Length: 280
Image 1 (cartoon, rainbow, N blue to C red):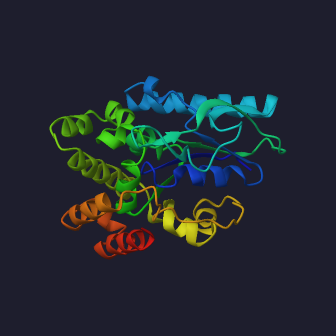
Image 2: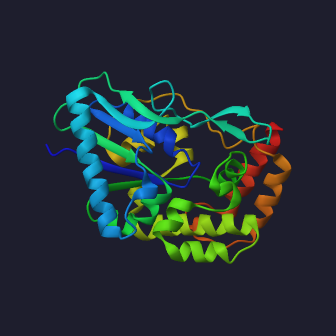
């Protein structure tokens, strides 16, 4: 059986880290959360894919030889969310994950499956990556995405995506030309959802809501990886989100005809807002 090298990407804050954590709990599978210095990848896409291929090979060798690999981690493990519930003085949630070594204690065969997750860089490189790797993307209700983007301290909070912009200069040009933060965030949603729709089959695009509703079975079915079935709880109605701001985001989304509508409709946005308001 040929070893599987799996690319996992998705909309930032869409549950990709949760899916990475779940995949890493499957037998004979290791999943690494943003282990690469993607800001150092060559801007030429073929060369970038070659560097990713080499990183897969080096990570495989390290795991088989020493049982260790580099990953974003919390206490030596891949978390299901890189941000905790605590907030800083700026009102934004504090990141708890840091780059370090993880140790994999379970037995691995020579043909184990290796998953590497990066959102912005892998989305930018998706047209080239799909020619060599198994690629999957995770998406989420756009209202929940905007709410999450504005609750954490990340570039997307300001409507920027540096790793994606570096590898797709046209994206950077469009964002540079837009002074409004929310409009830049909508541009980013358009860019992300458009690339997934154009370069991946429907079977390889996983909805966060379905992963949660099926206790992980939707992820297992899409990838063919034996993900453990665990009770999961949706964060689409988190109390950490600003309800008044979410109403503004919903109003703007209702007027926006972006590529996200191939996956979610206005009714989905309205339902997400109803759930959020019911919790506040």
